[in-house]
Structure formats: structure tokens, C-alpha cells
Length: 406
Ligand SMILES: Cc1cc2nc3c(=O)[nH]c(=O)nc-3n(C[C@H](O)[C@H](O)[C@H](O)COP(=O)(O)OP(=O)(O)OC[C@H]3O[C@@H](n4cnc5c(N)ncnc54)[C@H](O)[C@@H]3O)c2cc1C
Image (cartoon, rainbow, N blue to C red; front, side):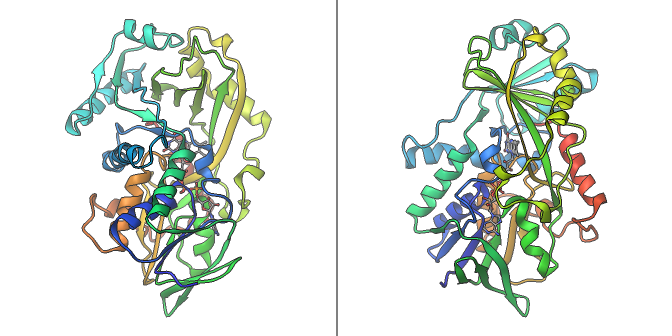
């Protein structure tokens, strides 16, 4: 089969890239996915789409997703049911209070609507949150969350409408290059020729690149969240998302229950060669460790709750996603190979920045001016690091355990 561009991986990033390429060019594009679409990290995400964050390089990437959601809702009516609940940033410590003041300046600089809210406001909207220790709370009303799988499938549906071909349950087994020029991929379904190959295989990306000695600066790092039993009075579906940096936690409503994520101190990385093909087949946390995270590492979060003993856990989710060494995405051309590109390292923000990934990658592949500076995302920015070394994976883990944003 001959195509012009092959995208490896039908997660939200591969689909967003396919969608943006299909808007800009009429060449033959194929997406190849080893399982079904959006069955990897995308299927397990908390899927906050928060623009306001300390890392300002990511804000235009997330703004692009806000624009894409608005457009795609009209393009494919009824396709996306985003929850426009807003996001409350909460400071309990002096340090976080100062950071919130900086965040307010960032919001003003990027025209993101925010308001400082009172304890009364918090009690009305988030009844479980204890207000006595809160020093400052900043509410951004336009923030939302989505179903990450749903958004990923909508990018794919839009790309299909524009002529992109999809091959699911087809594993790419080898990236092919002659004289350092890409020629296509070998797959479980045969040879696919192409002049451009984009590796959007998420946490698996380095497995494909390893034989070419072209590793990317990221590691698959575990994320964890919990979901309580339903209690719609306490956790109504329109309750705002909460970012609680002092508790290394975030919360959002989940169909009448509360979903809360803990940036746990260990956040271990898994060697890419040890990943199963299907994330749902693999266990990343023992039940013993899960209880430890809940008991010890969620202690600060519980201390910020009005009735902490009432927190009844129904289930937990733990899975890795690709954290880069510096917390920035990895998007761009792979040095030394003509026609080889990669998009991964979304560092827990791949749903939020998905359209930004798609647009930037499309612009880079088509050699167009880019809507953001691509240098901070350049795959070659850590030429000395060996992403398979323990030291390197530890650095990536720290990006997860130290994360404070949405
Ligand atoms: C617990 C958890 C919570 C999260 N919460 C949030 C959040 O609130 N907000 C947010 O923005 N992000 C969040 N994320 C991160 C988000 O899930 C990821 O950034 C995003 O899903 C990455 O998308 P992807 O397309 O790169 O990866 P994936 O969805 O993993 O897609 C990669 C695809 O490539 C396929 N593939 C791999 N190898 C091959 C091969 N050889 N051949 C063919 N196909 C292949 C895989 O099967 C997979 O479908 C969270 C992640 C986790 C794990």
C-alpha cells in the first residue's frame, strides 16, 4: 500500500494530527493503530482541558483545543459533550498564594478570564472543600473537561470525512529507512510505503525508534486517580474542577461522584520494552501501594475536606503516560532522518493540548510557518540523555510527582 504520510498510533494525538493534516493538504494519509482507536493512555485520562497554567508555552496549545472543540461540535453535531464547569485554583500555603498571584498575571497576559472568589462562593459551589485554611482561590470560568476518548474519536471522524484512511488492529513492527530517508513501515498487515512517517505511538514511541538509534526524551510514567462512590448532592455534575497544589491533587466531578488525582511521590517509570500492547492488560500499581497513596499521600487532600471520613472510594485508575524530561511535549522532526517525525511526551496534558499537537505537527510536516515556537518541543533538545537509563527515567518521574497544574 502506498501513502504519502503514515501516522503510527490512533490515540488522541495521532487522530488530531490526521485531522489537521487533512484540513491542510490533499495527499494520501493513513493512520495505523495496533488495537482499536483511542484504546491507549487516551482511554484512561482524567481529561481536564485547562488553559491556565504556569508553563506559558503550553497555553496556546490548549487554546487550540478550545477552538477545535468549538468548531468540531458544529461540524459533527452532538459529537462532544464537554463539561463547562470552570476551574478553581486553591492556595493554602504562603508559597502557593504567591504562585496564584503569578497565575493571575499570566491569566491577564493571555486574556483568560479569572475572578478571585470568597469562602462563601466556595461553600456554595464545592461544599466538601474546607474553607478555613484557604488563603486565596482563583476561579477560571471558561475551563472545562471532556471525555478524552470521545474527543479523540471526533478528530478521527473529521479526518475520515476529509479522506484519511484508518487501519486498526494492525501493528507497525518496523520503521523503514534507506540511506536515512524514510520509505514506510512494516506492519502485521504487510508493507505500507510512504515518504513521511509520524510516530504518534504515545508511551510506545521509543520502542519503534530504538532500532534506528533515534530515541526521544521521555519515559512512560505512572499516573493515578481515584473515583468515589456516587453522591450527587455532594459532587454535582456542574461542580468546578479544583487544582490543589498544596495537596499535589486535582479533583473533578464524575457523573455524581468525585474523581481525584494524586501526583504521588513515587510515580515510577516503566521501561518501554516492558509495556504490553494493551494497557488494559497490565497492572501498574499493587493494591497495597494504592492504599498507601490513599492513606499517606492523599492525607493533605483529606485535611482540606469537610468530612474526610466520608470519602468512600469505588475504584482507582493507574496507567502510564509519556512524561518528558522537562515536562514539555516532544514534537518535531527526528534529526538525521528525512521524513521521520514524532509527537509524544505530553506529560499528562495530551488531551488538553491535543489540537495544539495536531496543528503544530501538520505545520512542521508541510513546512509552513508554525503557530507557536517549535524549539521548546524539539525532540533533539537532550542530545546527551539515554531515555532507557534509570537516571533519565527518574528525571521524567519527577516531572509527574512535582506537577502542580491541571
Ligand atoms: C491516569 C491518567 C490521567 C490523565 N489525565 C489527563 C488529563 O486530565 N488531561 C490531559 O490532558 N491528559 C491527561 N492524561 C494524559 C493523556 O492521557 C495523554 O497525554 C494522551 O492520551 C496521549 O495521547 P497519545 O495519542 O499520545 O497516546 P495513546 O492514547 O496511548 O495513543 C497511542 C496509540 O499508539 C498505538 N500504538 C503504539 N504502538 C503501536 C504500533 N507499533 N503500531 C500501531 N499502533 C501503535 C497504541 O495502541 C495507542 O492507541 C492522563 C493520563 C493518564 C494515564
